[in-house]
Image 1: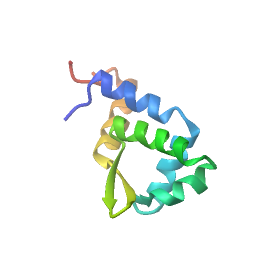
Image 2: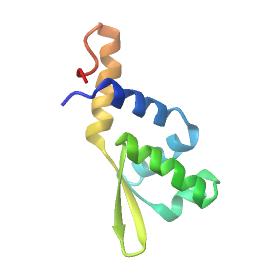
Image 3: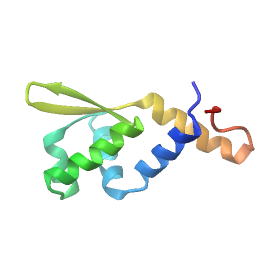
Image 4: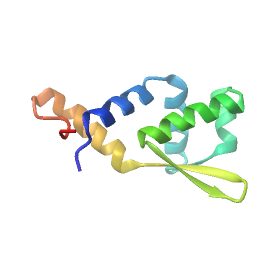
Amino acid sequence: MTLTLQQIEKISKALGDSKRLKILHYISGKGGCGECSALQDITDLAQPSVSHHVKILMESGLIRAEKDGRNYSYTLNCSVLNQYAEAMRRLSTAAPIFASN
């Protein structure tokens, strides 16, 4: 499946923030799955701000939430990440990078 222009835009905006990049880096370093409670420590943000950044990452499709009782863990959506990386690679070849809407 090829990403749409809107999906590429949303992912690009999500990746345009250093706190969200820290969150993705943390999850990646944990084998693709990270605990919600640790995100506050690695970003030095209050819980409402962490939730805001997580929401943006989820809406872009870069991560997925899994609830276990009262706790959440987040996993990387490697499929979306790989599709985005491929779209960015294709920019240098002048090949179409997105599916029509």
